[in-house]
Structure formats: structure tokens, C-alpha cells
Image 1 (cartoon, helix red, strand yellow):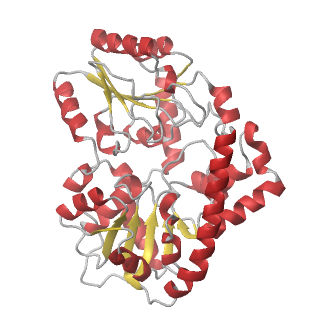
Image 2: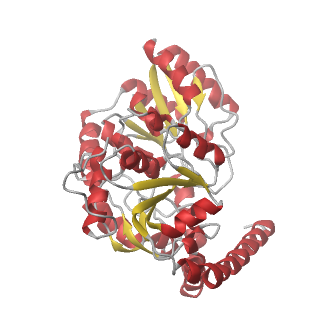
Image 3: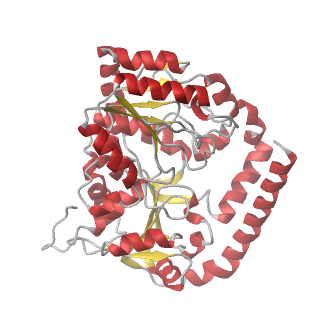
Length: 429
């Protein structure tokens, strides 16, 4: 770690400690006195309240069901997101406005799917609210508590006893390392082997993920999707061209993602021209190395956009270590893994929790030439069966379109939201 990075991290840690102390002293005692309404639910998306991932689709499912008797509000730090939701006739508030702060102090439950929800003192305005964490993926990399206890070999000192517990105490102080009321799981396997180790939670309900319903029936589904790219891809599909989704994971180490230097980019575009493919790239929002990707048949999605409405368009997926491939298994289409730097990744970026080979149901390649040849060859029946087996392990065969209904049912059983009136229904859109 460079001296500048160390100094930046130190300043950030000090600021978070003082922010946490101020929150506990000034905000939490007041928020604890405000009565909460069980029929009010706040939803806070990733980053600064993006309209993406599981919180987006949970919000859509609940907000469009007029029979559940609930008031649900998307709380965001992004005015453009709030406007988009409001324009469709649903509720959104911009934090930290007084309205949004008051709603956080009054709502009975909050649903999140990432780590940023606690920031800017939101955690303290939500004292005594029921906290439900969806998280944002299932894969094979360690997350949260499990990651902190098992850092990659290059960072092992951070997992030592004398460093780990001060880290945990600091994170608890400002709101990250807390005990949730519920952490949502996709299957028994992931509950027992991932989420029970990664989070402190009173409950671990198995409901599946709302984003994996892949319905795209409501205008809200397309908010924050890359509409420009969608329209281009519709034209490509009508011309009988095959769409390939490319989703590299984010690396903390510098470099061009997936070896996409100018020469390789040119080769990919020529390959697509020759064989009737269109490559659709979705880089992590923090990734800075994908800006140079461009070509007649190479399409780069807005990194902050929601890719899930576009996944059903894709004929196959290419990734390295991104957990999006697990959700893509539900579409029962080929997955290819480009992993030229496996040893470097697990030693410097993220510890792998499971055996990589057993958890990746698709052929592995160390370079683009081999991967492109593999796409032309197609996958074998062996990989098709491996996909089906892993999909069953990851999702227990549950219809993902029912996940919001199941979560609301669980919350009612716990008394966190009001029981349904006998004359009302219990289904979402």
C-alpha cells in the first residue's frame, strides 16, 4: 500500500470514528424515542441509493401490489433517481432532506442490499427499525465477517487477532458490522456456508432474490437500465446476431480488465464481425480500465446501470470471478470463464471460499484466443448438467419471482409488518 493510500485510509477511519460517536450521542437517543409505523418500509439501494439490484425489484413488487396495505419509499441520495420513481407515480425521497430523515425515523423496517446503507448517519436515524439485508450476490468469494477473518494471503495481517477486533469495533461503531434482523438467503447451502458466516443476523430466511424474476413487465423495471444500449441490441437481435454478455469483476490491483488492451479489442471486434456476435460489456462502477473498449460490435453499458433487464437477451456469459454468473444460471445458458490471473487474484484481491472448479460450471480459459474458440465450439452436455446441478444448489428450485412475497410473509410472521386484512390479497404484480 502506498503512503498516499495509507494516509487516505487513516483519515477516512478517523472521520468514521468521530462520525459514529456523534451519531450515537446526538442522533440515536432522539431517534429511539420516535414511535415507528409497522406499515412503513424504507428501501435503500447500493452506492448512494441507486435503483438497482434486489432492493429495486423488491420495491417494484411491493409498490405495485395495492393489496398489501404497506407504504414503501425508495430513499436515495440521487435526485435523478427520485424523480424517475416519482414520475411513475411511486414514492421516493432524497436523503438527507428533512422528509427523508423523518421517514427513516418513523419507518418500521428498512430493506437494503449492500454495505453503504448506514452512511451519512442513516444507521442512527434507523435505530429500532427492523433491518433486512438482501446482499447483492451469491458466488464463491468471501464477504463481510468471513472475509475480514480470512483476508487474502497478501493481507493476512488484517485478519490477525490484534488487528481484526479493532477493525470490527470501529465498523460496529459507525454502523457496518451490526446485527441484522434478517439476512435473506437463496438456498440452504448458501445460508449455512456463506451468509451465516458472513453476517451477524437474528434470522436467515430463504426466499430467493427479486432481481432474478426477469419479468421486465413494468416501466419501473427499466429505470436505470441502459435504454440506449437496449435499443441498439434490439436491432442486433432482429438481425439474428448473437449477444454475449461480458462481466469482469472489480480488482483492487491496477491494470486493464481481462487483458483488454487496444490490440485485443480490435481482435474481438473482428471476431464479432466474422461470426455474427455482439459483445456487451458491463464493468464494475469502480473500474477505470474499461473506458477504451469500443468497436462496431462492442457495446459498453453504463457501469452504474442495471444490467438485469438485459440478461435474458444474452445467448451466453463471459466472466472471471463476478458472482453474476450464478444468477445467469437460472436462464440455463452457457457460461465461460476467462481466468488468466487466478493465483494473483486470490493472493492479492479476494480469498476464494469454495473450490473454484466445482463452483464454476463452464470451461476455463487463460486467454481470449482459447475462449473465442470455445464459444464457436459450444459447450458440452457435461457443462449443461453441471449448470443445472449448481443452480439447484444455489437456489433450491424456488421460483425467484416469488421472493418478495416470501419475504413479506416472513416479516408478517415475525410481527414486523401488519398482518394482511382478510379481504386483501397477498400477491405482488
